[in-house]
Each structure stands twice: as structure tokens, then as C-alpha cells.
Image 1 (cartoon, rainbow, N blue to C red):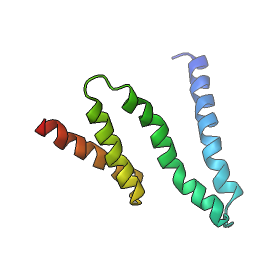
Image 2 (image 1 turned 90 degrees about the vertical axis):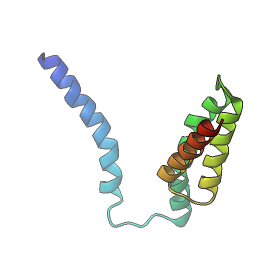
Image 3 (image 1 turned 30 degrees about the horizontal axis):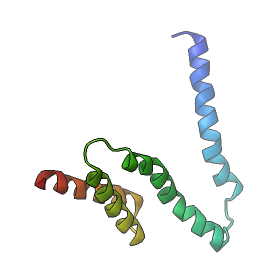
Length: 101
């Protein structure tokens, strides 16, 4: 492996590590306002929706498959489940649907 590749990997590691480290360093011991905490708690759900919604609209096989998965994910998220639970619940519902039909 050439030294140029090694330096590129080190640079990419630094570029991805620094934005993750800065909030911990800058906000250490400080409490964020409740409004900001509420927004940050909803970021994973908004990201999940932005990633999955186009796939729901452009599914090729069965439109009901996409709509049922979206409904299951929306219901789980609306009830306040964790993002992992939302994804796994939607997968479980779609697994049962594909087994039955």
C-alpha cells in the first residue's frame, strides 16, 4: 500500500472523527434547552423517513408491500418506539405479509 493511500485514509478518519468529537468537547457539562433536545430526538425519525419514503413510492413488485411497511413504521414511530424497534417492527410486519401472500 502506498504512503499516499495511507495518508488519505488517515485524512478521511480525521474528517469523520472531528465532527463527532466536537459536540462532546464543546457541550461538556452544559444542558441544552428543551426545545433543542426535542428537535434532536426527532432527527433519527426524519432521516429514516427521508431515506425510506422514495422507496415506498417507487417499489416495483407490490405497492401494498411498500404502503404496509410504511404504515407499520409510522405507527411504531408515532407510539414513540426507538428507531431500531421501528425498523425491526416494519421488517416483521412485511415478513408476515410476504409469508401469507
